[in-house]
Length: 299
Figure 1 (cartoon, rainbow, N blue to C red):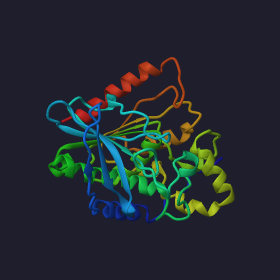
Figure 2: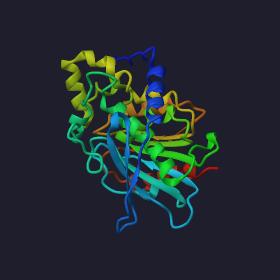
Figure 3: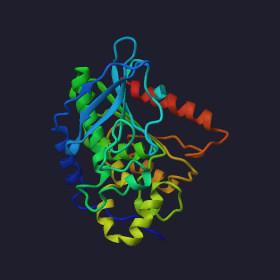
Figure 4: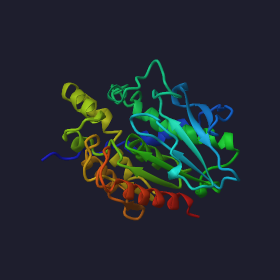
């Protein structure tokens, strides 16, 4: 039987320090004119001085909350507004290295290469930078929108939605930024590495498993980037939607993220499958999107 790995003793210290460094960054956002669909591009500075970007969509009237909508490991394919209340300002960031707003000559965009970038140390591992991109997105939004974010800080409600890759990165990022008031994580990746990497898959986990077979010393890095470990630190209402079957993200890791969230804060919505079509998909996604919008609109 494969056992989960113990948490690093300094796990909390490492993540708090990373978040503090990101929150101190001058995001220097540049806001471009809206395109034909009404989306503005916002480019901003993240950890390491890297310029990344995303799309900002504002409602017709005044906005009363802000939602960050992340993406999967395929990158940003569309601006899907079903995850946000109608009166929300919605930001769709693109993670570092990913096409097309955050591409970098230094970071590969293909998922099975991206997931290994900088894995030699926790200071350079790309997933730490991707979490910082979320924190720095909030920095940029406060400046661009002219608002203070985080109800617990006397500001406007800030929520996070992330699918797959974005779900795992969200589980890592949200606990360390007090501005976030709610989260919804769909088939989240990167949970319980020892368990998930022992399962066959066609996603980025396959590349990580093959790397570890040759470089077992990389466990000392990956142990800091386990979404299930970070999920235990979540202290905001969180919906997690793990799947019973998934060819790309082994369900054992998804459920580890869900079970990591304290029962006080979690709502679990079970999906029949992830990363593939199935007969119940439309009904399940409608229900899940409705629940997510209601959570994000809560006052």
